[in-house]
Image (tube, rainbow, N blue to C red; front, side, top):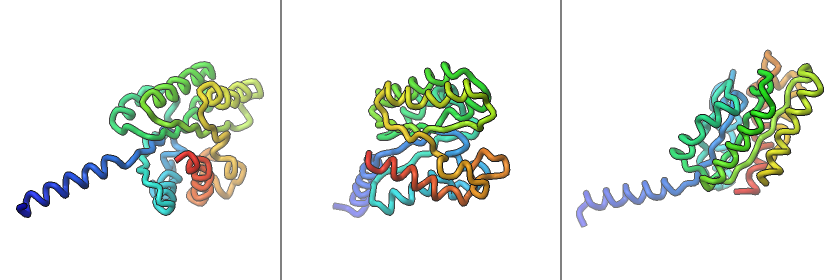
Length: 201
């Protein structure tokens, strides 16, 4: 066998092995897009390090965009599923719907579509829930908070009730806007997601 042919075969073998590495898509907003900090400081990047250290052969694909709503995530979803062919989809959307006072009914329907389409594409789906500041009124807050468990129960998907549970009420872990966690908060968020996610991998 010539050296040239051997190089080609080795390259093809490497491509096949690489192609088999399962992908975890993170479909989120600024909380997952490392808003206000360096990308490598964000919880998604830190989670990849934990996956590697745990010898879990998954590749994270961060498809999060600052300001994203559930409608925006749904509009991008088919393209992401086609391109990435994920084994797992982590959905972290809804906070911007709430902050903008958008319809809880539409938010719920959008999330159901996101989860359903992801499942139909063969992906395991997990939901990362969010909460809003208390100044949005009791009625709206109740409608918003109930969406995540309702959707998770209906479609039988795992739910992490509040991604920022351990950091949101600690000023030293939040940026000046009071909405986004700072770099110091990211390891805590990462550990929370890892403890939630890893048993399903």
